[in-house]
Every structure is written in structure tokens, then in C-alpha cells.
Image (cartoon, rainbow, N blue to C red; front, side):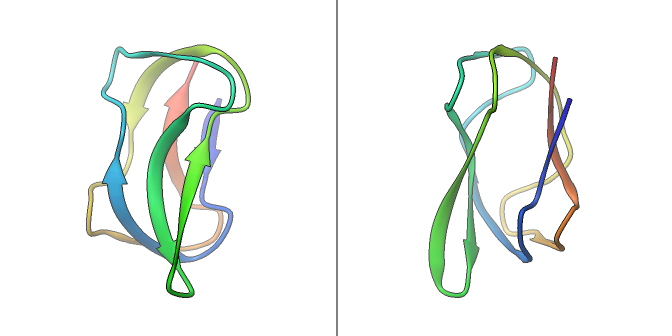
Length: 69
């Protein structure tokens, strides 16, 4: 399952690595939008399969950020 950007913004930091186990509501990355930092969280448990973005990158609404299976 892909976690997509809920709004346009800039990726500030990535809190997980490929292969990490994650729990429900764990922060995967932090993005800045409208001068506010927002933690992007998982919706369920799983393992990080792929990270599509890098810190400092600009993203648009709906852009894939992280894949968790």
C-alpha cells in the first residue's frame, strides 16, 4: 500500500528505512506545508518496501511517498 502526499509540500525528514517494521500511526516522514510541519503516518502495521522521496524534495498532492506492505 502506498502512502501518498495529502497536500503539496516539502519533505523535511524521513524517519524510516526500507525493511523497517512499522506500527499503526507511526510517523514515516515529516513534510512542511503552509509553513507547518506535518507528520505523515501509517494506517496499519507492515514493512517499508520502498521510499519514493528524499529530504528536501518538493511533492504534489497525491504523490507517492512510501510503500508499506
